[in-house]
Length: 195
Image (cartoon, rainbow, N blue to C red; front, side, top):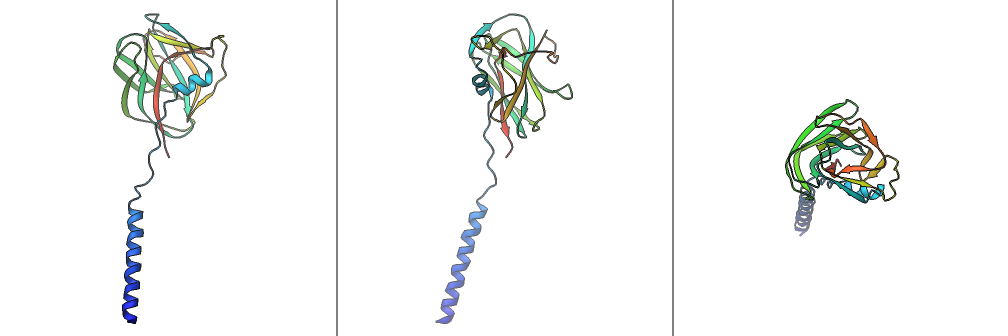
């Protein structure tokens, strides 16, 4: 009888250990953080809710400077413009180095419809400044109803926007003119912060 109780206790402990181990085995590690598209939060925070539409209005390279507040990746690019366009060029710049970090081509954009392109993950480093621009002669100008300026930075989730800039022409040149009373776009991206 004593042996039977000892064996029963050992069997119970054995199965408890198996259940405990199998529970640990099912933990597949951290779940990826959700992707963030910071554009709408930026628009809300700035109050740039008045829109003027420009079509065939001169060519510009223009977009936003930003810093991620966490390491992460850009996985997708979004663009919406008020005209049809093929082979729209989007550039991501390393601001400190003054170099092109990545160029992507969005094959087709339809008037007033957001287009997107999934890209090979592009690593971003916390607190490093980047800029995302596109080249077009079509855009939405977003500004406050009273046309007053804003103060950068603007925080939108894990992205801190540090400025909006532009340069004339069709060349892939880094913007040199910066404005605080409007933003021209709409260009954005999906940022996935690291856990």
